[in-house]
Each structure stands twice: as structure tokens, then as C-alpha cells.
Length: 140
Image 1 (tube, rainbow, N blue to C red):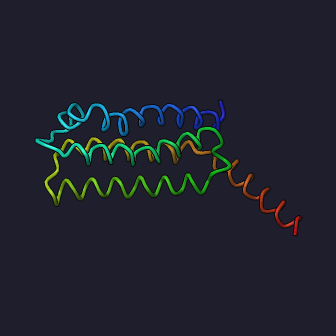
Image 2: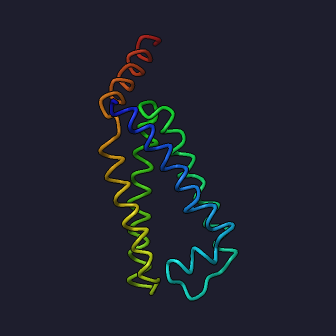
């Protein structure tokens, strides 16, 4: 299997798992999720909002799983989002006393960030980008 095929499969599986871990768990299994990560209490309405916000990275992964080379900018934005999200978790744990169970989310983000970077079809993406640019230049 080539890198593109592996990335597409990994992206699709990751999107499905993330859909459960983030939006669905916060919408329908809030008690389970917060107990698992060590929260003593939580605000259910905020949990629902957090679940809704999780739909965007899931949608991004679905788009990337279909056509990774066409959406390099989306991929780079998703990577930036992942770095910011991991840093936010660390801040909340250290500075605001969130449960250390949230380091699990930091680890998940870090592992997936590394795997996505490793598996992304960079060469195909650059070729697709160059083709689009050449086509645009010819049309002017």
C-alpha cells in the first residue's frame, strides 16, 4: 500500500474514533467521560458545547481522508489546531487544576499528530498544488 492509501484509511478510522471520543461522548455519555478522566464535577451545558465544537476536526479528517493531496492547507490548519489544543490541555491541568487524566488527551493528540505528519502524502500534495498553480497561470 502506498502512503496515500494508508493516510486515507488512518484518517477515516481516526475520524470515526474521534467522533465517539469527542462529540458523542460529550453529548450522550458526559458522566462516563468525565468520570473516566477524573473530574469531580462538570457543567453539562458546557460539555454539550464542547461536543459540538468537536465536529469540526472530525469533518476535517473526513475531508482529508477522501482527498488528502487536495487539501494541504486544511491539513496544516488541523495540525496547528492539534498543537494549540494539546497546549491548552497542559495549561488547564497545570494552572487551573484540571485532572491529570487529561494528559491522556495530550498523549492522544501527540501520537496522532506524529502519525498524521508521517503518513501524509506530501509529494502528491505538492504535485497537486503545482498542477493547480500551472493551470491557473495558463488561464490568465
